[in-house]
Amino acid sequence: MGDPARSASFLAGRWTVQDLGAQAVALAAAPRAGQRILDACAGVGGKATHLAELIDDHGTIDAADQSATKLGLCRETAARLGLTSINTITCDLLDPAAPLAAAYDLIVLDAPCSGLGVLRRHPDAKWRLQPADVPRLAQLQRQLLDAMVPRLAPGGTLIYSVCTFTRAEGPEQIAQLVARSGLRLIEEHRTWPPDADGFYLARLTNELKP
Image (cartoon, rainbow, N blue to C red; front, side, top):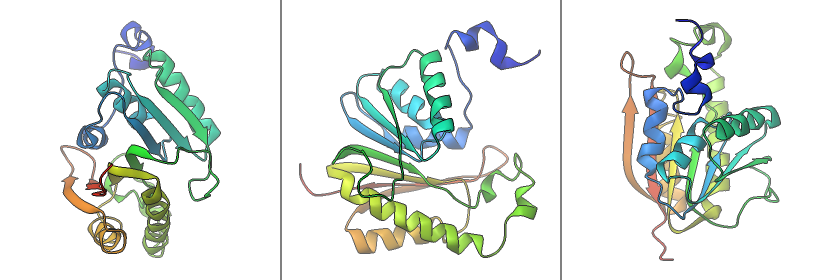
């Protein structure tokens, strides 16, 4: 069949590609039209564009990442899909001076992780990863979560996701966040191969009233 990305329907923005586990993140976020949304660690924009589709492009989505190259691909995808609600922001999310909004109704943090849930697509990770990588990445995830919580509006929703299955990066990470932040855990969800990649996500809410 050739390269699907060269098909007329793809170039016309009628569809895009995303794993089932990754799709579950935006669906769990349940964004609403008119919300101010932050897609933290946005990468090439798969989740940002999915969020934009779910709100019919009516809202403001800040797609933030350290990589200007990845955000350039995000802009290309948004343009192909005809989406105008996405703003790309190149920044360090751990920097308090990062040019982000003071408060977001919804924050999606697809955090850097060990990637053990996607070994079927990245088998080289079995040789690249070291035992010390999991605690190191869990510490980074903790720092990112602590940087996001102050930017979550009262009554807002935080979605945390990782494409791995370690407890330190998933359930334990979120249990510790709840204990120190006061956010309330609404739900946790996992996907497993062979039906999808190995994903973990959690939905939390800031119960302070707007």
